[in-house]
Image 1: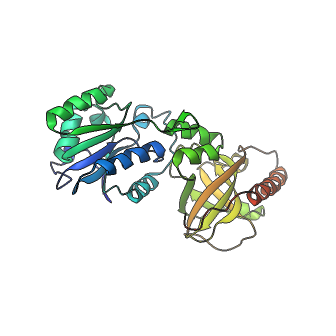
Image 2: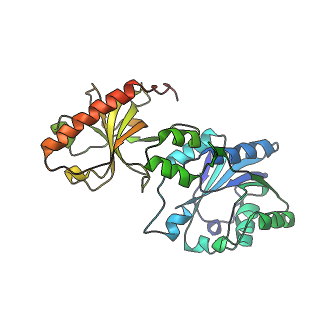
Image 3: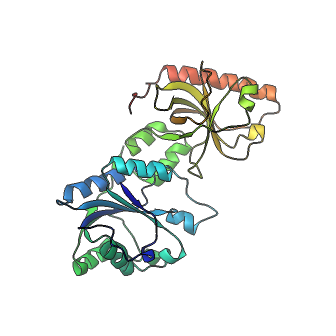
Length: 318
């Protein structure tokens, strides 16, 4: 998949040689609603059409609310990897900032969709808004399509258990530790991934060595002590218990995902770790002493072992 990272005014280059079918959105988490957009793109694409996605970084709400940005379900890397796996051929990761946010709806269509992407069909949700101050809607997009020679397809909202699937809803499920609803909305289990980094080795001193991952998607909607399955460099899934957050009990500052594997001891620094969350055990907490912390860690371990013994191990190649 080709990835473009710039603003439309940075180049006069057309990004496709023929025509394109384009889905537009934030695609945070790439949930089932987003999957429906991409499936529709493939369904309407003609021979030689490029299936493309236009998305934005940072998220528009993060730009407009820098002191209170929305939590991120996925990292940029995860988002691009999933889009590529869905057969998207081109992703334009557009830088969302002052100049782009001031672009009118009409100028967005001309500069992005017509001149750069030579669009044949635009695929959006029924509540799609675009352009400066969200001045554009689907009706305006259809009028501009008639003027500039492209079609507009709308995809209805996807519902799970009677509720509309949305990134904001998934953030709420994750904050509550509801991984069942999260998986139903995403269409896959929620995972975090990264390379194991060196930590302070405090866990080892307490009898609970951990593999540490930096939290790339911030702010993270999930936190606390969690029962997990993890795999190292694509190997078998192993049970464990994790802490996700700033670790107030030990004066931590940088958010980390710390994973303690049960009955395992090996040097895995630098190796890639995938972590799938099974159950939230509790929120992070402070303790009056290290002894109290160790007592709680033993309780967490036992609760996680009991929980994971009743859970299904993820499929090896999932």
